[in-house]
Length: 75
Image 1 (cartoon, one colour):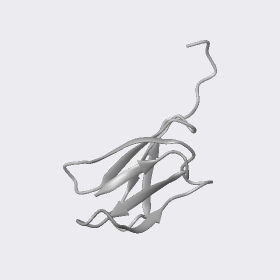
Image 2 (tube, rainbow, N blue to C red):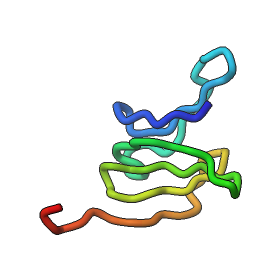
Image 3 (spheres, rainbow, N blue to C red):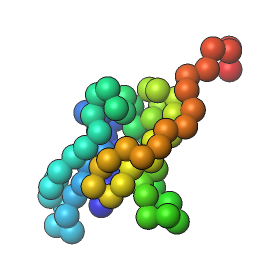
Image 4 (cartoon, rainbow, N blue to C red):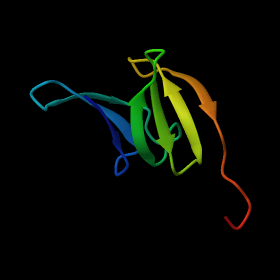
């Protein structure tokens, strides 16, 4: 199970027993991950509320893409 961890600024990976087995990304890569889900291409996509972007990761945690940025308008 892959989970967005806003408090620690990372993506966490748990085994089937619910134990944390590793984490990746972290401050400087992802600030406030809001949600994460698998794409049809087998990559993990994570919404980063802190940076106003979506990041694409390989299953082992390497960043392979980034879209978006913080806006400057009132909305």
